[in-house]
Image 1 (cartoon, chains in turn purple, red):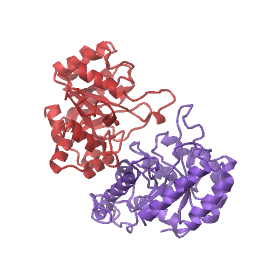
Image 2 (cartoon, rainbow over the protein chains, first blue to last red):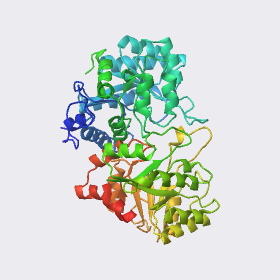
Image 3 (spheres, each protein chain N blue to C red):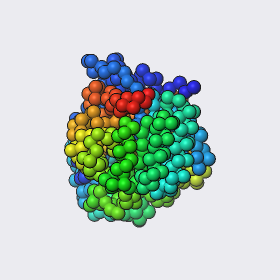
Image 4 (spheres, rainbow over the protein chains, first blue to last red):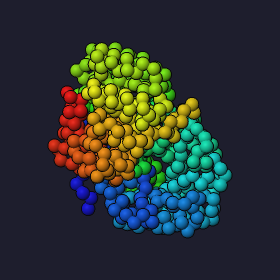
Length: 288
Length: 257
């Protein structure tokens, strides 16, 4: 059973204005929705403290009023080989069993192994109930090697969470990291795909990223990351619209919750970001 | 509540909101933060930081009950002793802020030691921001690393009579600054804005290793949203009396309020 939260769910929802009574409450508050962290990670099992680490993540989510966490486990080596990403996904599936309804799973693959990646995605989504696909920095999102994965994601009606960030200086330690321009290019080819650009506050030029995504209306942006910069959520709402923003933490939980709490936006926008938008995405496949 | 890590003025590489005295006070009212130690954001990149100190002094003049000025000084720049005197005696600053990476000197250089000793003689705490921006988002014009924590430890050891506040940093628990029995004098406190209260829980670890009197509240506003630091304090697994020390009592003691 989850521990009693330090910030009770009602207080959290009030604090962010999702239900009436809070300091930020709007005259006509939106209906309470699940708070869904659309980008997080469980520990790789090469870490001897993985079980405790996963437990701490759930405990922190309890304290902060986060209902569900969409998680993947990444391989420590890059590019990841098929046996490695398969193993990661098995561990994610086990975590979904350990924390039913709390942990939703992303199937992590390296799209460079086309046949193995597609088999793994089908196995994870169709047999194990995973809710999406996680891509890291093995390839940039605009490279054709991703196309079969995107085609399958469209067919299965699941989102793709793409690791991303735009550094202002080169060379970058991740030479094939994607940014908003790569995701925009992919979205032009596949406007029906549900693409999520990861961690706007993950340490890159977030103003550049938001502007690069303006002309890609089908790309969502996740709000996670450790960077606390004031104004990022407001700018994203202004340029992209609240329908395209998804609350996420990527292991920076208090930073990410605080950012949404503090953003000077309407309560209906906050409700969409915290869970309403993701619930719509999940409903396309019927994931709960 | 006292915020030991706040700023006024413009920053060279990004637009800041709430960066006037009125704007910052409005934000503080919304977040129920009574007082804040403020320094010039512009002085981070001004060649002559005293111009930024003058701007802050003018800005806080009518709000001294809530905005506590700190001076940005550069010990490698001409006239810092004059600036220090003016900042304390005319502007009423209650502390200093140092930017060794942005101002291109080392904390262990002789002029910096001279400045720290001068601050100690005047009873002014020295605040050292470990970072201003995440390095990955910096402008193509600059490449400024975080201040090295062991370099800070060396300074602290060399100036046991001085008082330090380390702000906008993390990773202390993996350095001598956060380890128990490190042999360092207990003349420094650590501010929480970039520390974790969950998972690794660096704040909780520092409360244990440094003691509950040496962890202080700060937000980094208006560079940062204040809410992450407030959220950390809310979920921190310590007693209410310890939280009260972090919220204000420790800062009040440091600033002799």
